[in-house]
Length: 454
Image 1 (tube, rainbow, N blue to C red):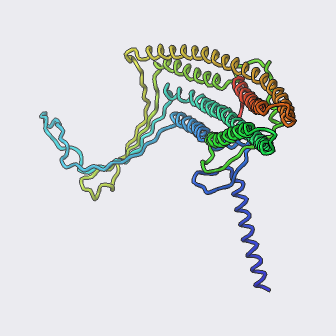
Image 2: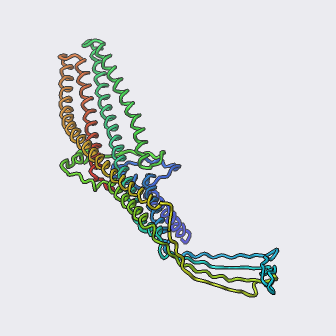
Image 3: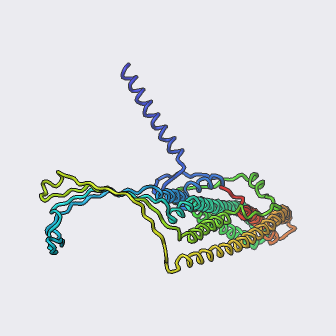
């Protein structure tokens, strides 16, 4: 009985640990290169973006840059704190130094000092006022804000790129589905043409034309199937996903169709653009530099303190028997009297750099306005094209069904079926192109408006 109870508890323990390990592995969303995971992961657009924001190298590098900016602020502020240095030396004179002393009115050479000395000491300095440290302290927080803005810019660009890559894959997947449907129709047409040829209803030309159309469709299907692999690789690179990890994309067509619309009457506010915010931070830093050069004539004032615990002895064995400590404290003032007009030239240079930033702002506003107008025009035209292509698909399908029926009744030639089939395939492909062009241009428009805030 005891043996069975012990065995049961042991098996329960092993099962719990195994389950816990499996749950831990299933919750881990980061798959590092070199892993042997062969599971195929299916991602929606939101999941692709979420994964990319956690694992993409550029985003993680930006996060590290933010931490570096915080470290730089601490380094800059440390200049206001006392700087304490400790040291010690041990010295043995092989030949004592000689000094000339007046003895009985005669300058006489005399050996001075002792053979062995040792001097442990502590030196402390404290900046009471320093223009350099003041500038570093003022610019520290601005540099952190600039690093954050750079991270935000990286995230915005990543969301844009991942969304476009996702839509590009969906376009290829839908094209493959169209080619599969087209191939299935053409294979049935080929079989029908063959049976009509064998039955003597039609000649061999119809059968060969059907075979040619089928071969072309199969070739298109193969090409599209291979192209999508490269697009998956591009998406995985943007996501920061390991090369060996297998992924697929999933989407809800109804939700996607609802998401194609956006407000085209919204007013452009350039202040929402992260590039504009970055430029304002750069301007602020440059203004701090100008102020620094203007006040660079102000003296630097620091306090200092030194403590020496000196040992001296003729015999090395007695060196540390007696100490002769000394200490002093003081202030140090450094005044830049003349620097060869360096300060004035730096002021002039910094003002020119500020003026250049003003022109950078003008150029940025022109670029953003152009980007906005271009993306808005593309979105409107693509949306109109989508509606037109949707109607074309419906009409092409209706025409194909009618022509196919007429061919079966011997009213139309098979060439008319080929033309109708080609028109149907082309209209379906055009519709898909239009749909994903709308989605892509919407992303561009939202980016231009500054509405992407990951």
